[in-house]
Image (cartoon, rainbow, N blue to C red; front, side, top):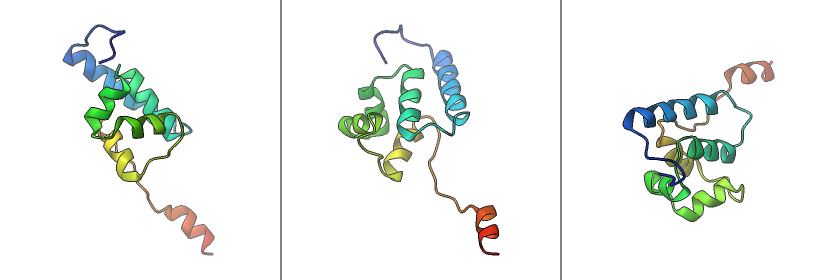
Length: 101
């Protein structure tokens, strides 16, 4: 937990998590780096905390946050999985239907 804040109770942690998820989902224009940074700061975690929770190296997480690396889908799923989110690739059936005609 980020030392700039007093420790959050489990109820407060859940509220912070829900707020972070809602805000990230409300901003699909954000890059993955912005989304990760927002999740981390809203939940009052340090980079080291998030790295430990997600089982991603500190350096990899730092590179993703700084935009030096986009990370793999597997890495992003580890990071996003901390809050119950998952990154995926889906077929845009609407786009595929119109481009095929």
